[in-house]
Amino acid sequence: MKGEATAGLSPLGGAVVTTFGLGHLRPAPGTWGSIPPVALAAAMILAGYGPADGLAAQAVFNAVIALVLVVFCIGCVVYGEAAEARFGKKDPGSVCADETAGVCIPLLLLPASSADTLVHGAVTCCVVFFGFRVFDILKLPPAHGLQRVRGGWGILLDDLVAGVQTMIVVQVFVRLAW
Image 1 (cartoon, one colour):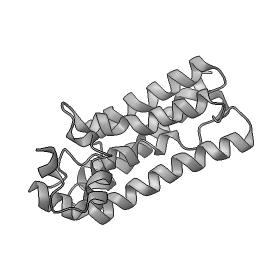
Image 2: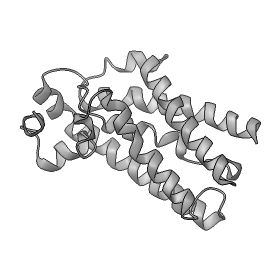
Image 3: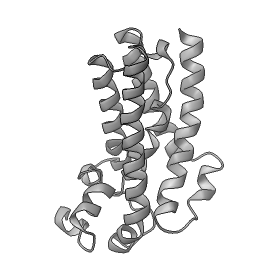
Image 4: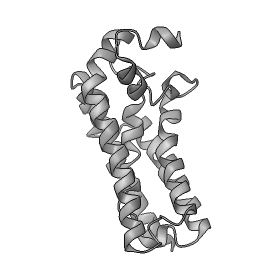
């Protein structure tokens, strides 16, 4: 099934829309697709390129997360319609590039206090991950209505809204927690 899943898509398109194959994992492919940006953020924080490591490090952190966001947004929009045709349904589960993009939003512009200690960094990454999954699953307005949009935009937009909703919660949490 894995080889079959990307038939009709270019190899690059298949890799991008499934977040390099993570969308083929079960259960909960959207959860698998949400992991890479959070893991990347955690690794950057551990390596000294987090929001609390000075303006240059914070700029690198935000640039890398923004690059991931843009690449997977473009992938959804460009290859989304072909993926829907291949899988034979709207917003197929194996397409998790939308979750990969969406979870980047709450990782952007984190305050320094979100990662000024390893514990704060770990807790912030966990709040981002679990918060995003909750908002993505619940599809609170306006996310639910955006699923009616056709093609790649329809796959992507509800996850971007879930990312913004999560960003609000994370920003409030970090400012109140520490």
